[in-house]
Image 1 (cartoon, rainbow over the protein chains, first blue to last red):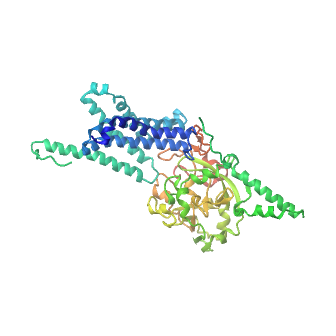
Image 2: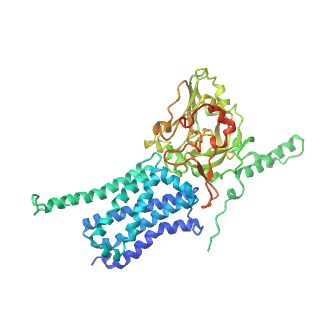
Image 3: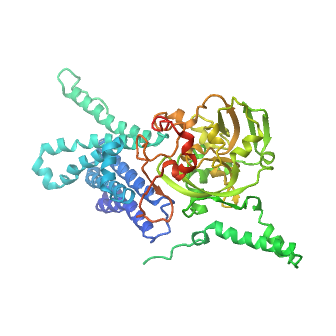
Length: 215
Length: 320
């Protein structure tokens, strides 16, 4: 039994604390409880940090399956739901910070921006598509939906594509950061495509079924 | 539970008031001396020995925005200067490598007086003054900044532009050693900006060499920069090394990089949105409150009375 396995009971609480930390730090700074500062434009900092944290957690969520397949460590799977739920949590905070702190809950301005600004439209679309995934993330829904659960949760792929597109579109000129996220996403999705192709080849009668390709 | 917030003197007294107080003291001493009253010599020296006196210029009451100026800290820690990185905290973090002295400015193009001039010679005949201007960034945030400088028109006249001079183009230093951000080709270096001649000669247009009574910090465009308060901030080119008088409209950096998003004129205009965001309102930086309301953006950034006539008859949706 490895050290990591011995402390398996700690994984989830540790991840919970780590994933909550960015929000806790921002709240602490906003309330003046800590010495940390949100900078000269705190509203922009909060919106940006929530968005980036959501993106990072979503990418981690998508990394679970490839990592599990690469390492053969199936325990990693236990963390995926929490990562995904935290991604949705930060995406909601990101939207609420924009609507409330930046737009002052001015519904007309918010509606205008959603309708007129494509990057906001697709960002909101990504958030809305995350909602059914978050709701059906419970064991009960998994049981109830059976195979359909997996189909439904493939929505995470369009969500990720919309999210990185949303990031890309609101950058003024320096595309290096969204480019890095797009590159990571193509790795994560590319891995799945390659594996799928290899698997179908491996099982199809014409393929070399006996020697599965190394993936 | 709440810890005592750190309070800096600059949070309480706007730096200008603070400086004015000192200025008053100096004037008082000078006045006493001129009346032949005995002056304690040490005090007079102390008032003089601040080292930055050169930039402690009198405020021009004609150009004082009604809003309170942002703090020195806000102005110098949050701005765009892609030559030092694309984040708004990058300029302050990375601008130490810039050497604003010695500094030369080349003058060429459609003018009688051409050549390369040392900054001191350019500045010597100019009397400095302080102007408190609104600054509206194209990214929909704004500040109020007490610049120290002089009208660009006064400088331009000295070079005697010819009748062929229809525009003036400005160029920023191009030196990736001093400006590490230039190692990344996020823009086509060097940065170039330009004005139509009548815009350049407008009394509101100024060359700034200081802020808050001090020399311009590197991150704000030392040693000299352009300030055009009715235009989006990116028109205010920093760390200028060249001015060219041209017949043709110069190809400017942002309008060249994304012509659909940034125009040559770049006049602040709440009616013409950026393709990706609204320009109707702005977030005023400062105060630190999370719940401060956005404020309405004014045509020509509130300077319409002074400058709207420059554009009469022009379709400002087309020439944005």
